[in-house]
Length: 68
Image 1 (cartoon, rainbow, N blue to C red):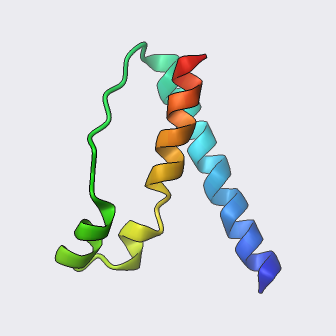
Image 2: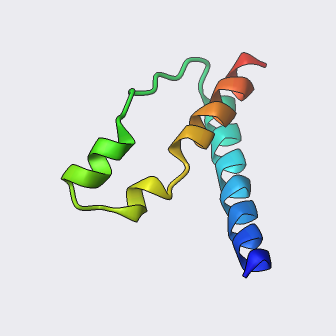
């Protein structure tokens, strides 16, 4: 099970790195809306699908790539 969770985690990180690189190469300035993901998961009945998407990790990747 640990190897399976590690594989999923690595796939998510790879996807987020690729998307953040694509956005940082295409645009000079990017604005990101400050979203409350916990409230979204509770109020919109999305549950784990909202919590599991790695939004915080994506914004971190995007921020440091745009600062380069």
